[in-house]
Image (cartoon, rainbow, N blue to C red; front, top):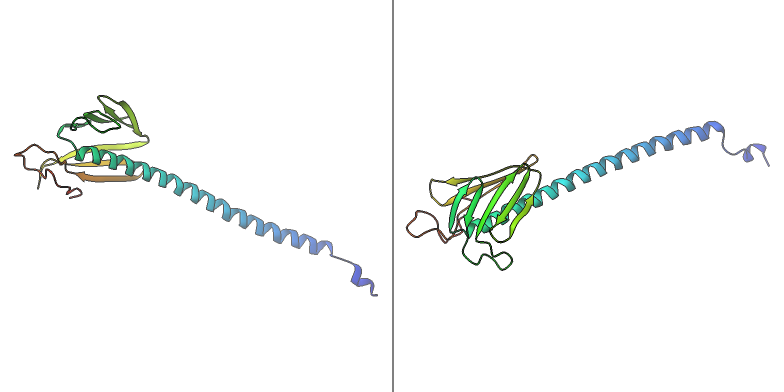
Length: 168
């Protein structure tokens, strides 16, 4: 047998292999690191989005059932007795305190609806209809809004009373 066949790998070949594998490893871990950062960022945005949508839907559902809106800052309104089976409160108030949005009922007390809320605003619509309200919640850089027309408006008022023409 030839003595060159039993030599194995040279030191140069081993170093080149280690360098190439090291470069591939750096690129692989950089890719997975960026992937994980993107995943975490999108997960946090999804959570903020879901919580903001829940807040808007909850307020809209309760305000849609209101008989009287007493103020828009803070949002305070009356709903028909006995409220709901889970909460018999008939006076509901939503207040932004710092970055926490709280819901207070005359029976249930104060409940934290959401935190990290930058803006919570409610404004009455006066044209083309009355008795409708714009609700806006802003979390981080995202803003969520809807328009709600209570169905239980007093008779003789110029509102939608009874229909569900939200999001004018």
